[in-house]
Image (cartoon, rainbow, N blue to C red; front, side):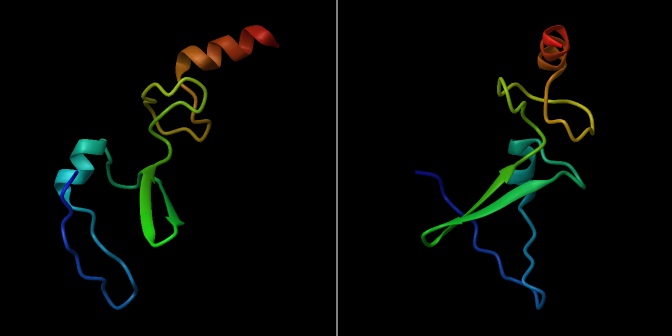
Length: 78
């Protein structure tokens, strides 16, 4: 079981993700995350860091969410 860190919402409903969490997930300034709600639990998941096809880490700042290997494989199919 992982431990949490209690944070306070500001007047606009924002929180700051702890640096320990950001570092562990490899999140940098302006990275996008998916915020979802399931029952009474909020999930925050990095969105553009992993390939949508194979799950490998994606580098660069493009909107495709595909690693270079999967991009090349898709190009071969066309």
